[in-house]
Length: 248
Image (cartoon, rainbow, N blue to C red; front, side, top):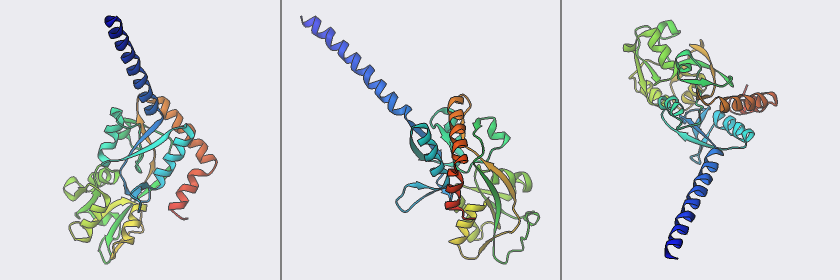
């Protein structure tokens, strides 16, 4: 009898372990884990409540709702997003991320959901009037962004200083450590609004497409995201979210 009870206990324990594992798996599969870098307003930033808000956060929430999943957003360094998506740590990356050939070698991208403009911030009274005037100047950028890549290609690595966040780059400009900052136009507007004495040059530095990155092998999720995006574009949801943060 004791032996029978011992066997029964082991069987019950095994069954419980299987049920528990299955339960965890079901819970995990119902989540959409998104990596972002919450220092890129108005695409992603931390609101007064400490929660991550912005265009990307709202579009991602709408996509998750379409897929019947619960959205969870993880704030991490921009440069670690693609690696995290590649390894399966995150389901997707959404951080005002530009589609380019180098990134396409590592991850797949969804259809475009927004168009970004790279702008140049300088102090008022600066002798920098156009992108051509950046030759020989010290330029601040957010590390691992396309602004970082473009600036090094155009002006040389020795003239470009990368910072962890766009705000860090702007503060370096305020303190005179760099002569200009190259960053997306919408965050640029937010930064000059709270830093007196700065302006954005009238001429855009570059234009680019923003999309969501997904691991190359996760084609099912990519198809689901593209289907959801198409529906959200068609019914005006994407335009309304963008207009909420970027008035015409």
